[in-house]
Length: 488
Image (tube, rainbow, N blue to C red; front, side, top):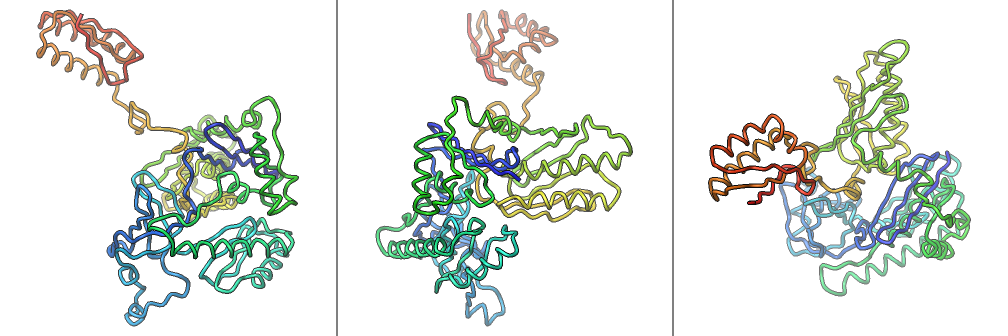
């Protein structure tokens, strides 16, 4: 598989598109004046302990308090004497008290009215490894599929693991010299020492460590051995990346290219059209079928339909063909859209149990490419596939769209007929209160078509009954569902 990363550095934002065999697979965006807090480390203060939820709110100096769940608080091997005697897991009220200070790391961004989620289990990622202070883990990335290299890196992880900290070797360390790994681990240990030193200084709450800017973060996460090219369309950003690689992994520099063409890079690689598809509710398949995405507060529902495809043999084979194609598309769209939480997929109904299992197997294989933890639970008796995806960032739609001012984000609004009748009631109310001789009513063109059609007699009756001349005028400046009343 050919894998490329395209970095588009604009005036107000930086965007990164990851392509797999020319198809958009992942997309990241950060506005220059709205930096991410993901991975930042803070010295915070416990604001409130919630025994009923086994969680706590932590003040880390942001507009919203952070949320700390008990499983993100307990270090490896933690033994709580009271809980041990009772044969129960430790309780958060036995571990934290209001006003207590502690160091936490952001693992999930703010979302709507919710604050960020934090953990006390700190991790410091580098390009080739992740340092886990206070833990005793030595392992390698689950994405490493080369058995020989896995064995080599596992041995390295055990030999390089520092005292008092865990270590995970990342996929990017494949075939990397041991000296590079040792140097990076030493640098991560120094970084952790600096963070520990900062803990006892200054006011609380405060930030102890900020993740590198978006450009360096993307290089660290995506410039891996399986990436063929990393293309940048801004010379200053290209120089920044080369400078970073000079001191971390000079061997990766040939992969970084400067895009100096006089046309748009994202248009050339068809990224913009793929983004439009990722923002659409309906996605069409090559076979003629289509998929519909509906996201609610609780979960995302995905519906698969046959559309124009009618097949050539049996209904069962037609359903199988479309469902398998849809499974691959759904896995890719979930990554691009950054959909998380509970996901329910309603595939086209199939009677054959083997066919059901085949579709689920295709979906499971497709989600293996996802960097974010994704679990396909299986198919229910109703033929619905359940899956979950860990939430780390906001979905793509939250970065690139806003709620419709007409429907408030519901996707539906009142019919023109209902709005027209409400307009009539407002006109009557205005006439009764102000007793005008003549009115001009500005309405949305869709509403005007109703008021000048079968509702026209009602307006004429109102005018006659109240001795008022009423003129209805269409205007695109008027919001759907609103009116402007002028006395003339």
